[in-house]
Amino acid sequence: MLDASLRQMSDAIVQAHAAAFADFPAQPAPPWGGDHGAVYRAALQACSSLGFIAVDAHCLAGAWQARADRTGRFDATAWPDAPEDFGLQPRPHAHPFAACPGALGLYAVLPDAQWVGRMARAGVPTVQLRFKSDDAAAVAREVRAAVQAVQGTDALLFINDHWQAAMDAGAYGVHLGQEDLDALAPGALATLRGTGMRLGVSTHGYAEMVRADAAAPSYIAMGAVFPTTLKKMATVPQGLARLAGYARLLRGYPQVAIGGIGAEQFPAVRATGVGSIAVVRAIVNADDPEAAARRLMDSLNA
Image (tube, rainbow, N blue to C red):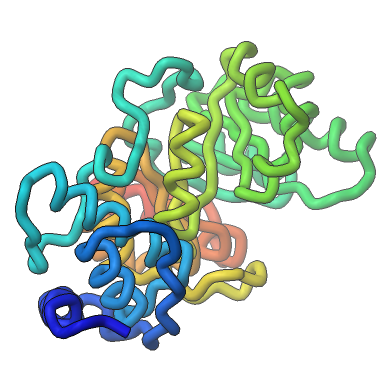
């Protein structure tokens, strides 16, 4: 239970930010454990009330406490977004992955090499091969075909998940989820970094962003922004208010917004400060995918 002074701080945070996070149901406040300060405990309760799951509520509470310690004051109205308050690495990173463009533009996530080549020739600046198969030989063939498909175009090709095949084929980069990072053998991340390949990492909240930052990737993807039927998500849709907070925190990284984003949402997503938007259905389900890609690129660049 919070005493009166902590309850007052917690209520002040909720009142200041309830409108932004109105779409999220309150979560049970996790035990704080350890020797945490008053601001931490108040913010943990408040962030849980605002709908953040336990790991993200703890992450935010730590940032709120760190900012109070750093500035000497508690400010309920300012949402924490300073990288140092979340423990992100100081810049420049000591061991970063190779850099990619700060704004990756339209980012098309595609099911096979034929689609990759088609969108690369249509002028889409960033393409990802998301090829699902347990057949290692089939994966290797498809990755090589995708690398060949973008040759002669300006498209940057990322390979989802299959990092060894991507490395063998000389792909521009690889994209990994949190589970993929966890599954890497010791030294694999350093091996990838040493090839000069770019690395993108998926995140679904504050705690995963802190974990992604530890790898010093080339870009960070944030989602799912809106509901999506393409894959089962462990977290609820993040929405625009959370996305804007994520973009402020990760302002030192190229950022990609992903998940359920259609053409009608492009202006609102772009307004959060994110420099790239990833799409799947908006292209592969379109009657004229090339025309759809052109419209999406025009909208993103407007």
